[in-house]
Length: 176
Image 1 (cartoon, rainbow, N blue to C red):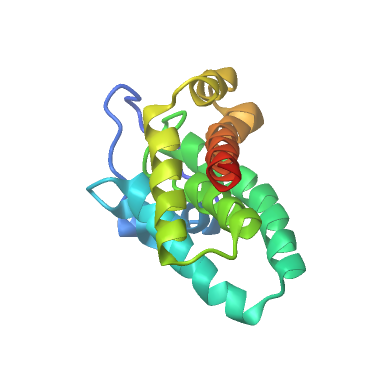
Image 2: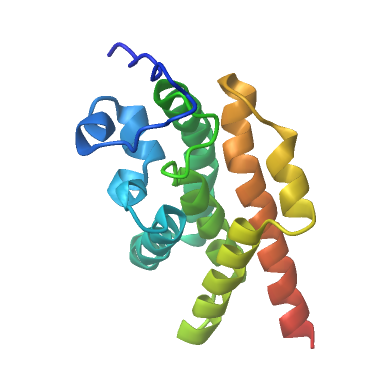
């Protein structure tokens, strides 16, 4: 498929549509299979989708298979986020939620087993670190900006740092 050219005015990005999402497999992946089309808090919707998907996947896949899925999803997501951001004409659009999906899968994979409340706290912590971008998450967010492979990695990178901060908070919580 031919990539869609970026929008002519990057200062006024357009919200992606269902047609845009289905115009290329990379868009479908980067937009979290539709979660990123949410008009309200697409990152939160993407994280909720990741949570639900993980709970389903853990019944079919072993822990090792989920780990492999996370690695493959990171590499495929890097490509998908790079291409979709370029085609949208926005370096890190909020509608790209694959970064939240893969990063939250990582949190759940490393922190499980947990009951519902533990999972909810992991969700809330991850959303806090991802949205507020305190300390290292803010640093990571500014590290890889722009278009191309570097920018595509930057879309994912700050969410991986938010996942690390979430896991650190959970480890401290369990220690205390």
